[in-house]
Amino acid sequence: MHPQTIELLRAGPGLRHTLTVLHFGTPGSGPVATIQAALHADEVPAMLVAQALRGQLAALEAAGHLRGEVRLIPVANPVGLAQQVLGIDQGRFDLRDGLNFNRGYADVTEGAAALLAGRLGADPAANAALVRTALAQAAESLPAATPVQDLKRHLLRLAVASDIVLDLHCDHEAAMHLYASTPHAATAVEFGALLGAQAVLLAEESGDSPFDEACSRPWPALQQRFPAHPLTAGCFSATVELRGQADTDHALAAQDAAAIVEFLRRHGIVDGAPAPLPPALCEPTQLASSEPVTSPQTGVVVFHVRPGETVSAGQPVADIVDVETGQAVPVLAQSAGVLYARIATRWALPGSRIAKIAGRTLARTGKLLGA
Image (cartoon, rainbow, N blue to C red; front, top):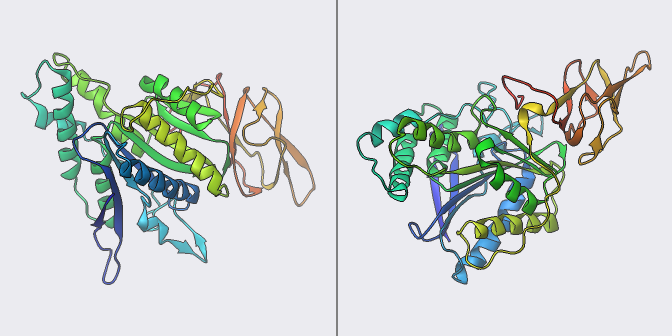
C-alpha cells in the first residue's frame, strides 16, 4: 500500500484540509478501480466499509493477488467532516453556500475531446488508453477557487480515468441499494446481486451532475463525438447506498467489503476464479419511476413499512399525526415496489420527502435525486 496525501486549498489562515488516497497494486499493471467513502461526510457506514476494504486489499496485495490498481479514498470529504452546527454533523451540504457535496461535478467531455482531436485510431484498446489520459488531464485543468472546488477537482481527477468507480454512501434508514447508468444495467445487476441490493436504480441523466455520472458520462459522449474510431464502454460507475446511517457493524462492513472485492475479481482487478454469482434480490428499475413519498401535512411520522419491504399501490406507508388536532392522515403509496429508504427523523413538514419506493409506473422528469 502506498499512501498519498493531497493538501487542499486553504479557506483561511490556520484552516487546512488534506485528502488521503491509499494506492494498492502497481500502476499500469491492469484495470483501475477508484473507491471513495462518504462524499456526504456524515454517512459514516461508508467510512467503516472503507476500513474493512483497506484490510482486505492490503492482504490481497501482500499475497500478490492484485492484477490491477485500486485507489481507496477512506474519507472523501474532509471539508464536510469538519462541519458541525450545535454539535450535529452537517456533511451533506457545504455550509459556505448550501450546495450539495455530491452535485455540480464538471463535465470534462469537451476538454478531453480537444486533447483527443486527431489522435484516435482503429485500435479500441489504444483509443481507451488515450481517452483515460485525456480525461485525467481535462479534470486536472479544472479551475478551483475554493477548498470544495479543489476537493471536487481532485476527486474527479483520481476517478474519471478509472475502469470502475464506486462512490460509497448511505441513506437515512434504508435497505442496501445502488444507482448506476442505464447503459451499464447488466453490470449494475451483477454488482447488486453481490451486495444483496434490494433496489438497483438506473438513469442516463439524473440531474445536477452527481459524482458517479461525471465519471461515466464522458465515454458515450466521446463515442458520439468520434464515431469513426472504436471506443469501449469505458467506465462503470455506481453510487452504493450502504443501508442507513446507524448501520455501523463490523460484520456487515466486512461482508460489504468482501462483496466489493469479489466484484473487482470478476472484472480482472483481483486475481483468482470468481465465486458463483448469488441470485439477485431485485430487478433493476428506472430512477425516473422511483416514487418520492411526501408528507401532506406537518406532524409526527408513524411508519407502517420498513426498508426492504414490498408495497402495493394504495397501501398505507405511514401516518402523519397532527399534534394540535390529533388527526392522523395516512400516506399511501402511488405505485407498487420496494420501499428502499425512509427518513430517520419522525417529524415531517408539508411536501417533505419521507420515503422512497422503487416502482415501475411513474415517469418523473427533471432532477430525479432530490436535494
